[in-house]
Image (cartoon, protein in one colour):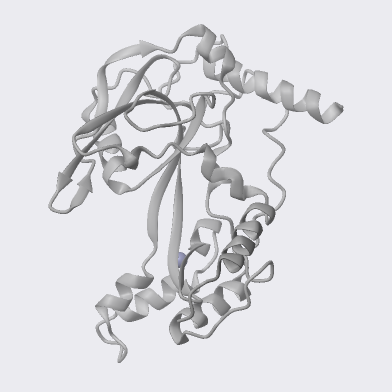
Length: 293
Ligand SMILES: [Zn+2]
């Protein structure tokens, strides 16, 4: 295969920054996985701006990896958007022992990958990061998620961990298992703590679902899938770029009424606005003010 010239690369990167608008997003992420082995990063999960998020502070991201034009490309699993997914169907077919094309390796290759997106305050870490950016996104796999799930099951949490007052810091511990990084000893700190008021004042929450891998049209997905299977090339550029889900919902609905804003599982029916609700309200008001300009 021909090596890419510097000019090709330059134009590829050009496209990256100009298409879609969501491509600046990588800067917003905290790359905890860059930490050295046997180190710990301490973060505080923050609630999702979207109060309808049933998980409160995490969203699932389902993707497939295809090889197109010799490059690995991540595409959204259409099931994440409530549709049948042709790549999932293909994976299932390969896994099916009764199918003449039965092939475990290919079943695995096309199987969807799950990760979770949250937002955090980075409190301690050996990883270099932009301290100016207070709230960072984080994207991790099932290993870390399982630790979070275990904490919920244990019954040790007195409050949702993302509560700004009385929540829990999370310690991402990187160790090694064989040749791979392992995060299976990560856990919540046993002590409940408060986020300082001046920090809360500066927090701007993200709507997590808008950071999931954008939906690719079914037609485009099928083209990419065929390219992956046959090695056929796909014209790159705007046509081939997965169409980013347009119309990012204008940062939250109008100010939520205090009455119906109680999605937290542990809500005990207090009428006073929680810190989280105040944060959401403040941001909705800001967004409304910005729209009015
Ligand atoms: Zn799928």
